[in-house]
Every structure is written in C-alpha cells, then in structure tokens.
Image 1 (cartoon, helix red, strand yellow):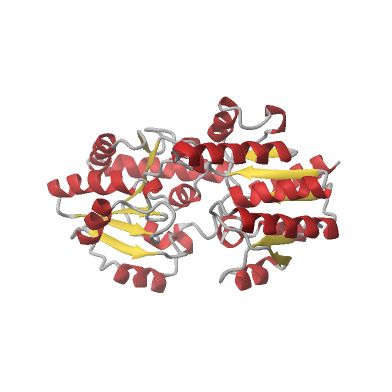
Image 2: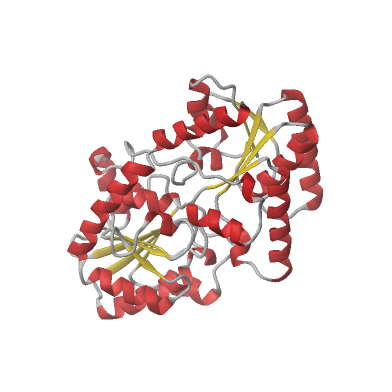
Length: 372
C-alpha cells in the first residue's frame, strides 16, 4: 500500500533517470498494480506492523541476505517497521548509504511500555541509518527536541513531503463528469445540504472521537449538515471506543462511505474538509484537499502546520480539543466565502512547494549528492 499510494511514481521516476531500482515490501493485493506502474523489480519480504519478535528476526535475515546479494549503493526505507529492519540489515550487510524517511511517529499517541518500546525502536533506526529525512519541518524539530536522531544525520527534501502531490490528477479540471455523478449518487448528494468530509482510517488516532462530537453539536443547530467519513475501520490497531462507534454508525447525518482510492471526487463535492488527526508526518490528504481547493480545517500537529497557515489559507484547531474544533467548525461554516478564498491560497502554496515532479527531482539530486 505504501508503494502504491504514498510513493506512487517515485520508483519509476528514478528508473527513468538512470537508477536501478529494487522495490521491497510485504505481499499484498496492490503488488500487481505497483509492478505494472513502476516498471521496477520487486522482492517480497514479509513484514508486520505490530511487534512480532520471531517474524521480525526472519524478516531481518531475509533483508540481510537480499542486501548482500544485491550490494545496493543506497537503501531507502519508509514506515517504522521497514525502517528498523532495513537499517539494521543494511548496516550488517555493509551498505554504506542507509536512508530512512520519518513520516510520522506512532509513539506520539502511545503510553506506558508500548511508548518506551517504540521510542527505543526509533532511536535504534536513527542510529543504524546514515541519513534520516523527516518529511516536514515541524517533524524535524520534534525529532531534534526529543533527541531521537543525531542532528548531523537530519535533513529535509525541499520544504517537506515524501513524494509531493500529482497536481494533474488533483485538480478540478481533471475530474470525469460521469464518475463525479457516481460519487454524488454514492452519498445521495443534495445540493441544498452542506457536506463536511474527513478522509483517512476511521480510528482513534485520526481524531474521530472529537470530530463526531463536534459535528453532532453543529448538526443540532443546523440539520442541513452532513459528515462524510471516507476510510476503513481497523479492529486490531487503534480501534474506536464503543461510544464513538455507536454515534457515527447511528447518526442520521453521518455518511460512512468506506475506503476509496479516488478521494478527489469526495473533495470536489464537499464544502469543507476536516482533518482531526493526533499525529502525522506530512499528511498527503491535506495536500489533496488543498489541491482540490476544498477549504481545510486541520489539527495543530506536525505536518498539518507545515501545509496550512491559520487564517491565511485554512484554519487550525488544537489537537484533541473538541470544544475548539466545534468553535472552528462554526466559524468556518458561518463564513464560507472567506474559507473558499483561503482554499485558493492553499492551492497556490501547494503548487509552489509540493508538486510531485519538483519533490522527486529534489530527491534524485539528494541521492546523487550522498552517493558521491
């Protein structure tokens, strides 16, 4: 999924610019599409997201053997588990350039022993890497402040983002009218209503608890509001509490749209985008909302604050603060013309700083520098 969605086109770009790229990931339904689109070799190494010591040791051994055979000039890892295993295996295999991208830190919302284990894993990953690239300025500062990685290893590609955004796809002018109508029918679209959309996994860490309650209070005052939740549920990792689950499943104005790849269509038919997440690295969905000129209201966390400037090109509320989210929702809904103007300015910022081709070119330049 990371190769298909988060890094789409990056491997292909590097191959087209003279690099021999080998993709490595667990198996999955997305693999066929990934290989066809990227046109790069791929090796399957099973990796889990949870802490599974025996499986992790097997994965480490497979990666070590793979790196000894391939002798890559660069290893570049994404996601926490893949990062830890790849940086360890790369160090053991003698690969001289080992890059890890930090795109969010899971321990930011963890407590107790789980948090201590995850912090130790991040520090070990940083120690085994030769270069560590947080994908936003605010995340970079958090890593430094919490002494997770030697500052000499840290840098950012451009002004942030792991892969930028495809502005040809995420543009109002690129929408297919027939498909747009299908998405309208999916949510029983009514032009007399106001649609608020949230996109991402429907889990605790995405701020669904606060969003559901803030929206319900707004709806009690205005029955023409609708909340569209685009994303899948996760029962094992970070599930919602029973009360929140019951609220969103039974609420007459909440639409559970499920998981969809083409989120641009939801953004195009919504009047407001809300991202209530507790933690991010550099959230692609906020870039997508901005590119589609959908007015944005986001939580005050690393990543979000690198994209949205409060009151300039969107609104920011305090993370985990239901009252502040409620007040900012009302503020936005009461002055939608101003929100639409902010959305236009957000699109301009994204065009100037986060276009996919620009980010990939910067990444290629950095690869060439560190190999030298």
